Length: 271
Image 1 (cartoon, rainbow, N blue to C red):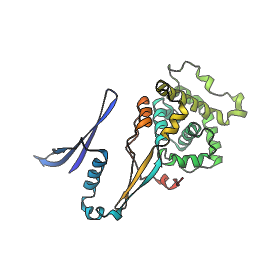
Image 2: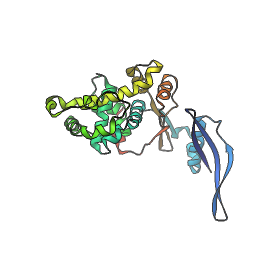
Image 3: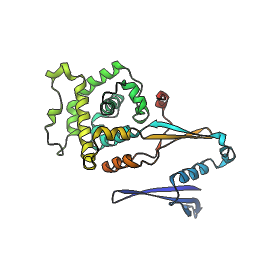
Image 4: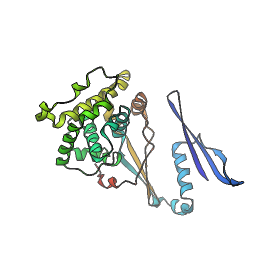
């Protein structure tokens, strides 16, 4: 027995269908039987049913309140949102998939999230779960500087991915030449963060929300960590209020669950 969940997007709105089903074989073929339609259940009820089915052999243990722990989890909203928009404008494809690319992406995000808070890039990454969400490895200040040089050298290949007819400015205005070598360290990441910010402003301007206010609001979205029978789940509450308005305006969905199986989780520290 299992819960079969399907997602449908209709006229910009997302709908979920949940069916309680079991499987059986008939004439050598696997078939499915629908036992009940659970679509009217709340998210919490659906998760409870899924957990009960997953641990049906441990229900006696799970029933004990001493085996259940719920606590506030990690911040994920700002990075998940920026990651989605960066993918949309081909920034992630332009940077690539290696650790240098992931670190460059984080430096771009950090420029948009930080706004002079004074936190180190390492501490900011811990605060906003970048080690988990971007699968970053630990880094130091020297590696950050080397990464900026890597980004500078890669700027020409970034142009062909990033800029499209939607930008009326000349792409070269956003990049540096060899003559700018003395000031190159931070400007490429700053310029790329500017492009990302301007893209986001096109979504939020119609609803009257400035960029800084919006990204700070999304930065407040945290997971809820629930530990049952020594297994921990990171559930993301359904966004409401201004957070939902910001996500809907940009047509971005925050994932409902955040994976726990990631070595980078060891580098998360409480605020």
